[in-house]
Image (cartoon, rainbow, N blue to C red; front, side):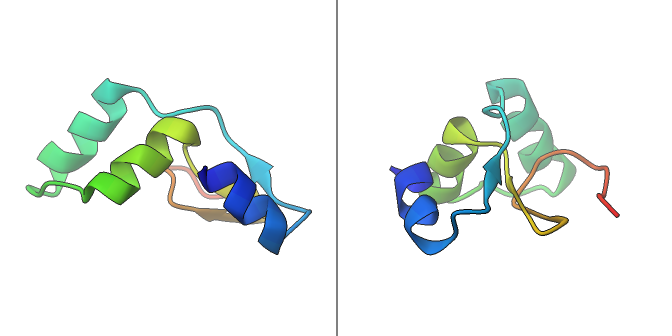
Length: 65
């Protein structure tokens, strides 16, 4: 669902592998919050998007330059 929606917006988007349940739980623990279901579903489909050198919504800590 999310990939199809984003592909309609940008053909240049590169999708990352899905986030694991462990990665999602680590984020929730680290920030002491519960992620919205929509974001969890997004992360389970793709662990972020790379568009023109910018990473969006990834559980990874590294930045692309």
